[in-house]
Image (cartoon, rainbow, N blue to C red; front, side, top):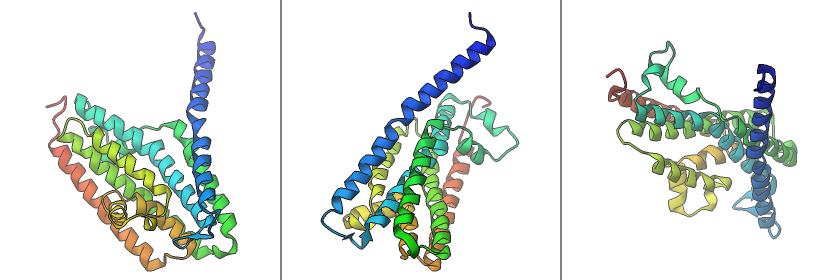
Length: 255
C-alpha cells in the first residue's frame, strides 16, 4: 500500500507521462503543415498575394486559435453536453457566477497547451521573417483581430452546443465543424467561392485565422477591424441569446 507521499509522486509521474504522450504528436503535425507550405513555395514567391513569411504567420495563428479553443472551450463544452444529458447542470446554474462564463471556461485540457505554445512560436518565427513591415499599428490590429477571431469561434461552438438542450446528440454537428476548421490552415481567398463563403459565414474559421494574418500583411485597416469587432459582438450576442433560450427549456434534476 502506497503512503500519501508516494501516491502523490505516483500521480504526478503518471500525469507528466500522459502530458508527454498527448503533446508528442503536436510538433509533428505542425512541422508537417510547415513542410507542406515550404513545398508549395519552392516554385513561386507568392500564392494569391501571400508571401511565405505571411503564410507562416497564418499557420501559427491557426494553431494558436485551435490550441486555445481545445485548451478551454472544447473540454468545457463537452462536459456541458454531458451535464445537459444527465440532468446535472443544475449544480452549475445555482452558483453565484454567470452560468455562460462558468460552463464555457470551467474545464481545461492541459495537454492542449502544447498546441497553443507551439502556435505562438510559429507566429513569432513568421513575424521575424516578415521583418520591418510590422509596425506598432499592425501589431495592435493583429492582436485585436486575433481576439475577435477566437470569440467568433467561441460563439459558433456555444451556439452548436446549446442545441443539446433540444436534441439528444449534437456531436455530428461538432464533427462537421472540426472538419471545416482544417481548411483554416490556408488563406480563405485561395479556396473556391462556395468554400470561401462557408468559411466566412457558417464556419467562420476562415475569418478567425485569415484576419490576423491579413493585419500583419497590411491588408486590414482600423475600419476593417472595427467591422470585424462589430460582427463578433453580434455573433456572441446571438449565441448568448440562444443559450438563454436553451436554459429556459432545460429540465434537470430539480424539475
